[in-house]
Length: 480
Image (cartoon, rainbow, N blue to C red; front, side):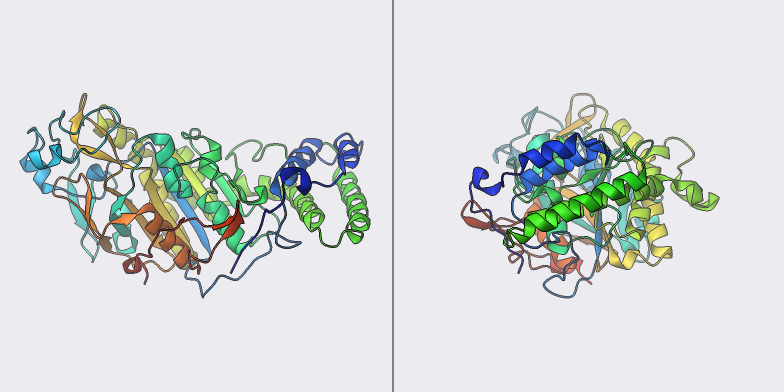
């Protein structure tokens, strides 16, 4: 059982070592001054750790199916009706008013009333794929080839119909700010598998729609567990450029080690200094490892072609997916990719076609490449947005937000592919069969990583907190 505590006030948590910090920030040794200042600030916010090595690899509660996660978050809200949830009834009733039974339910939408619009059929055809016959829309011709690897959950739901709170729910389990992201929980529970790169890395192809604090933050967990933003080109990580030569930096670290050992010997109960030095050592090693990670010149022409990194419109997201595979090889525990922007309020078909054209080949390539390298069986790949969209038309052939029934899929480590789990009603408005709340989705992800979601806790403000709050049930059908 992983537990931790923050029972002291903020003032009580920090020891009087400000003079040394001020000295280090301005030191002529030049240990990447901006890196050092940033890390010290993070350490100050981190609070007490449960060990001297907070990122040390840990064993889960029971044998895990997966060792790592790659989460593809489709910001804006992909329509389940255009992607993974075929609805023949919508073809039959296309252009007609929504049935009276839906008018009386009072389902809240952001920009319209459910009764205002007319029903709109899916803008793309669905076909059965693979030996399983899993139905996927024509938006994803490449991903469809992996139908037998996908477990599509068609009955996801929650209650937040605005982007910010909905994104927070899917990423952190709560619509309120200040809660740790899924990646932070996983890193807290399992630690790191690499000494040279962050355990939790996040990438985006166009900004963070709900804001970084919601997307990849550590919330009330120590800051060491938050995601590190990686740029796919140029300088990969902010504040990582060294101000001095490697030999000078090494000398500075040795001085820091000696000082901290003396300081810690007088305060054996305090473990923060060891955690700080681990951060500094990681930053030192990342100056070489991070640029090497994004340098894809060593990839074969066939691999670059597989991901589409040298052509449009797949170049940017293709590079992200290729880097995700390279991170998996290098021991990064949790990779989160943000793909923008699926918010199809108007001309939903054009919006989704553009996004699919950018992502279909790269995502399929990621699954292919992981499988060929023997990594897929130990890597949990997840695809989801913050909500789905309405079966009624909004504006000019668009769809409004709908959190009441949407689709997500999992593949890889421990996932039983080639199946659709749960169902929405005949119009695709709300989940009605085998309903899977986001808490259930998170509980299932943790189970595949070897955790009992009720036992992965952190003591904060008087109670043991967890990703799934007081809810959540594992979707056993997903697990092979």
